[in-house]
Length: 392
Image (cartoon, rainbow, N blue to C red):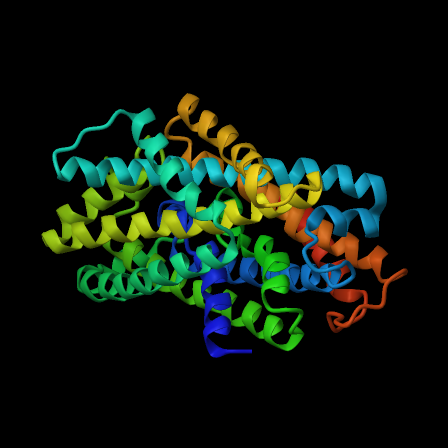
C-alpha cells in the first residue's frame, strides 16, 4: 500500500469528522464549560471509535462494495434491515441538511464580501450543485478534492489557533456545569460520525486490514486533538454568557457567520475574520463530500444501482434533492440538525454495530475480530442505551 493512499484514507476520516460539528462544538459546549465538555468529548471519541472497529469487522463478513444495508441483512435479517434503512436515511439526510445549511450560509457570507448578494435559496442551490458534482465523480475524485481541501484546512486551523490563543482569558475556562453535558452529547457524537465511511475505505484499500485498522485509529485521533484545542481557544476568547456570548449564538439562524463576526470584534484582526470564514467554508465542504459519498454508496447498495451513468444520476438526485428541499423550508436548522444527527449516530454507528457483531459472530468467522470477545459489543450496546436516555 502506498503512503499516498494511506494519507488519503486518514484525511477522508479527518475530513468527514472535522466539519460542521467542529464549528458547533464551542457554542454547544459553552454552557457545560471546558473541563466537563472535554471529558465528555474523550468519552464520545472512545465510543464512536470502538463502533467504527465493529463496523469494520462486520463489513468484512460481506463482499467488497457492500454497505450497511447488506451488513444488517446478513447479521440481523429483516428487522435489522428495516432499522438500518430508516436510521441511515434519516441520519445522512439530516447531516447533509446541516452541511448544506451551514455551507450555503458561509458561501453567502463570502460572496457578500465581494458585493455579491444572493437570496438564501440561490446560495443553497449553488452550494449543492457545485459540490454535488464532485461526489458524483466517485471516491477517487472526492479523495483528491478532499486532500487539497484538508491541507488548506489544517494549515488555516493551526494559524487560527496561533493568532487566537493570545486573546484567551483563562477565567472563561473556569466555568463548570457538568449537569449541562447531556445537552451537548449528541453534537459531540455527531462530530465523530466518521464510521459511515468505513465500508468505502475497505473497498478503497483492497481489504488491507492492517492499514484499515491504522487508518481508523490515526484518522479518529486527529479530530479529537483538534477539537480539544479548538474548544479551548474559542471558549477562552468569547464569553459564554451575554448578548453576544457563545450560549446566545446557539439560537442564531446564522451561527457560523455570527461566530466569525464575534471573533473579529474581540481580536481586532481583519486577517482572523478572513481566515475563519475560509476555514468554516472548507469544514463544511469536506464534511459534505464525505457524507454525500457515503449516502450514494449506501443507496447504490440498497437499491442495486450502479454509481455511474443514468443510474448514478438517479442516485445523485435521491441523495441531494431531499436535504436541499429541507434546507429551503427550514433555513438556519444547522445546530438542531446536528443534535438529531447525534441521536441517529448512536443508533446506527453504536447500537446497530454492537448487535450486528453479537449476532454475526454466530454465523461468520471473518478475517478481523475486535479483541475482548463479547465484552466490547455489550459495553457499546449499554453505552448507546445510556446516551439515548441522557439525550432525552
